[in-house]
Image (spheres, rainbow, N blue to C red):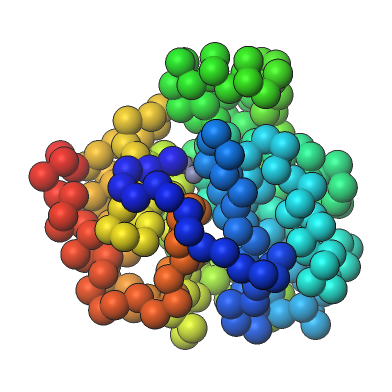
Length: 256
Ligand SMILES: [Zn+2]
Ligand SMILES: [Zn+2]
């Protein structure tokens, strides 16, 4: 969910295109609501892979099939790491966990505590949205109570299947939003904080804070990024230098 260009005009023939040796891409399938992109991180030979984000309710089975079609054994998926816990990212976490029940769930601690208590404010973001989604999907209160196996902190370095990713705590779109950054490959997975086409995540939902989002964008602007793999819309394989800073500057008047 974000502001800016909403159309999704990225089409791939493969169910799960490979971005690099250690990054696969599962495009979201938007319908009347956005479905987050998911990514699979790790070198397949490691048999220690991580799924990044799950997606919207009822959007789990095609993602599992995409992984299988790519020749990856489901047993290699060891964990699901959430960039944040909005419905369009966590909606099908339960569906996916039923198929890979051994997978751990890793979430930034600020949203992990809510999930463990079954506090769904961060899932739906606002009451109106909760009511619409609950009736649209037949979701009951308490549908999003999960045990979190690892509560992440900004600054951690994760070894994910022979590849190292830095956890960046980038609040503003939600309080526990994280980005994953591969420093030598210059790959950034920013969740819903920044997208292609100079768009950024919305900042009017529960736990959001415009001034924090500005700080997070400025922080991301300091990173060297060639490949931007956001939660929605297009992915960018050769990001222009200064792109994130330019995006932050464009939005600055609104982020106070
Ligand atoms: Zn989203
Ligand atoms: Zn979001």
